[in-house]
Image (cartoon, rainbow, N blue to C red):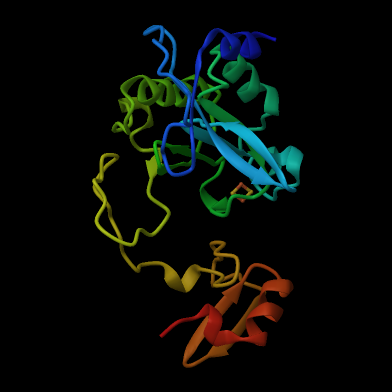
Length: 234
Ligand code: FES
């Protein structure tokens, strides 16, 4: 297999969890045209395994995995099959640096089709990927960061597709773009699954502490009622 050939052509440099070189492992001159590969020793089921470390993972919300919106033509999204992404990924031979995973629902269904690119320790969210032209652009962006060995701002074509979804515990370098946080629109959120729900048409709602809380489904409403304070903070 092509990716296995890639891996075998690279010399492995191993390192432990503590980032210490294994005793006895000599530094190996690396071919500068090839990515440097390292492994980490991981113990599982009383056995030691060598796991190749990668720079990142591209997660694609896939209808094939039972999601609820992304890829659903009947919900106005671009239909896709997984091969649109996997063929492009294989063609670029980046398997040993960037993993590709098809997931179920990633969460922000309202802005799908969605993808999450975790790279160099950052999480970059991609939304509204409703045109096949975005697929090579996403891989171009990822490859440019693999090449640069750091997170880069998105290229022109993806600038309005990339956003921050995860809260961070401290200051970030904001390499992607300035963070814009606000509290507008929270009245439209199902507080359990975080789906966007139109209060005017919501079928499932409760009154709680002077607010109308809306839900996308009875299951969310039921969960909420078991412990409202867990879902609606002060
Ligand atoms: S179905 Fe894709 S994010 Fe929910």
